[in-house]
Image (cartoon, rainbow, N blue to C red; front, side, top):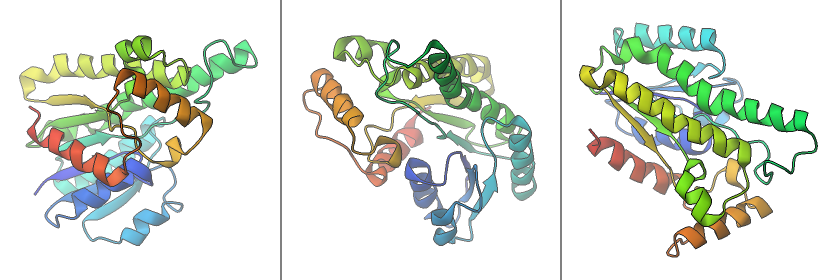
Length: 241
């Protein structure tokens, strides 16, 4: 039996993680959402081994309360933390296309607060439980858009704020990995691929991203489903040490 916490679990990739992990009744899955009442798809799942908890990753106090609930249910242990929660506001904007410098700064900080600092808050909240777990794995969903080589080679100029926050996330994971390697932890940044979710709905921005990816990877075949993405991610997570 393994225990999992999945952030951003109300929809998309996070919801699919909950579905696939809870398919094994021996697993305990804790789904973190910003709005518990609005997480209708999670409630429809209605599995006995899924517990829905309300916590915004930008709220350290709420995360500490959620961690306390998990601790009660698992005898103060956690095996896996999947940091999936994320956001993007203006995927088509480049660094010089915002309507004002104030709008630019607000958007960069807003993305950074969720996609980078939010991961730090989530990880810190659950670290005491992870130290008592058997797997000690922390998985952080990243993005090709946060990759410097991809950005330069594919001329991926859009989603500027989001890309900056995801590039910073790579260093966050590296810092944790270096600090906790001797304690048997595994910290992993993983890209889910280009997934058909609400965040990446059909739009001119999505078409621009697809064109950039095709330039970088000529064998790119288009969006994949959350089901396919999570299945492949779990295979990587399972074998990564």
